[in-house]
Image (cartoon, rainbow, N blue to C red):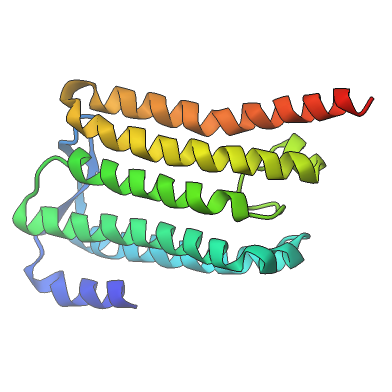
Amino acid sequence: MAIAALSLFKAPCTPQQLPTHWNAGGVVDGYSSKNFALFFFPAITLALYLLMTFLPLIDPLRKNYKQFSIAYFLIRFALVLFFAFLYFYTLWAGIYGTPKINYLIIPLISFLFIVLGLVMPKIKKNYFVGIRTPWTLQSEEVWQKTHKFAGKSFVAMGILTFLTIFLKEKMFSLFMAIVLVGAFAPMVYSYYIYRKLKLFNK
């Protein structure tokens, strides 16, 4: 509601073209019409909020959400806040001009990773949130161990990605490398734990 209200309030003083895409160097390389830019991000933000509100209702493991309701709320809030920030940044960039987006978006994503890392160990088994591999969904113990590992992985990923803003030319490539390793590590770990437990129980 607040984002939609801001769209209507800022519409008269907003340029006809607003930046909506940035290259790897953080420089604007794509613009969209004012009407599209003003209402696209609010629509995406609202859709994300409604989707995350609806998902627990159709999850076969819906009862488990009660056990991590605060963690789920924080995940939903952090994601909505992230898209809201992108919207405010787009408005600000169009009206006032801004520094390269990398110096703003990378710290924001880093903060998001840290939030996810802190709540990850609290997530109970479900089909929509967390590290959902064939091995975590097969075993409760694998799920728990994997999400404890993922919590550490995401916090480390948040700290390391934040540090890339000081590397200038190598910022984007190192950022992507850290994200890829940090995202895939828990998946690989889930398989490792599954195999380890399976061999141990033979």
